[in-house]
Length: 182
Image 1 (tube, rainbow, N blue to C red):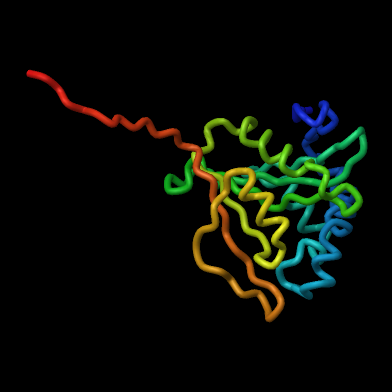
Image 2 (image 1 turned 45 degrees about the horizontal axis):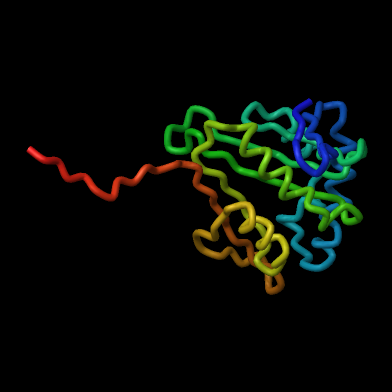
């Protein structure tokens, strides 16, 4: 089990196994149902995703799906995915989805998990994710974690728009003066 340090060591990430898919699916539906009820996004809502699709995501070779465990209780999930063998996306990871069930939201859990994911995948040069533009709390969370908005807005329906976020992890050394005496 990989552990997230901080929050008094109360948060742990545990890789989800295929036989735990039903538990993860229940958490995902509980976490996303309030957003689904608000936006009615039938084609994009994780609340409407089937158990079969969640299971497929768990066993995909190009991703890791974790339970978020807080005080020993499973309170959410986070999936990190990447493209294997695609030079253009080498060392680019996506967070999709990340979720916390409602009674544990706004406790700093998600930001702690995101920061630790950066350490779990040290070769990542760029992180990407999408979120709902109208959910300003989510946008603030990602910006607090160093993400910046990029790309075009995607209108899902009259109530909901998706926006993209990126965090670059390349440290560039700048030299202010490159004068050489000959």
